[in-house]
Image 1 (cartoon, rainbow, N blue to C red):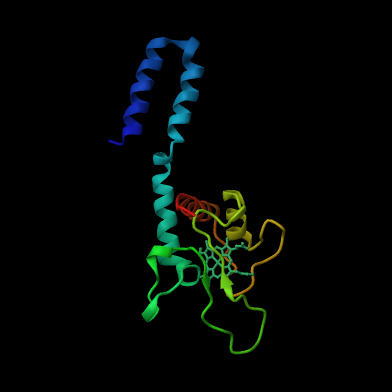
Image 2: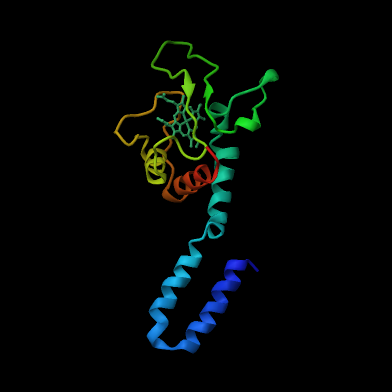
Length: 151
Ligand code: HEC
């Protein structure tokens, strides 16, 4: 069993013995325990799966080494875009670092971008950044995964 689950189960038993007066306090202690980083691991796992195997964020946001392979030592740390559109249109030449969230962004701002395509200031990233329309669960999972990485 997960250590947090054991801790929560133990504190639940203690709460029952202490009676009603302390029940509210106990409730908030247990809620705090449930918010420890370990409690989010299934959300972070979903986010990692979406980033690595569905949305392919690393294709653009991770630099490549010789031979074109992704440089895992600089995972999601920003990279030049290696292709150009056949017909000229607005196009970004670089994908910024997103490991540990983009500099100065909150988790909620990343969720908003992934759900609506809008940056915090209302502008839209240029192609080839895809205009994702993720549902809330997926967007939160991707943002939680990015936040779990070191800058
Ligand atoms: C096909 C390439 C590509 C893919 C795939 C891609 N991005 Fe991007 N992304 C970009 C480019 C290029 C920019 C910069 C756009 C600009 O400068 O206007 C960008 C911008 C962003 C920004 C805005 C950062 C800022 O400072 O404005 C975030 C956040 C972001 N991407 C996250 C993601 C996430 C998360 C994924 C996967 C779910 C992803 N991107 C997949 C190319 C890509």
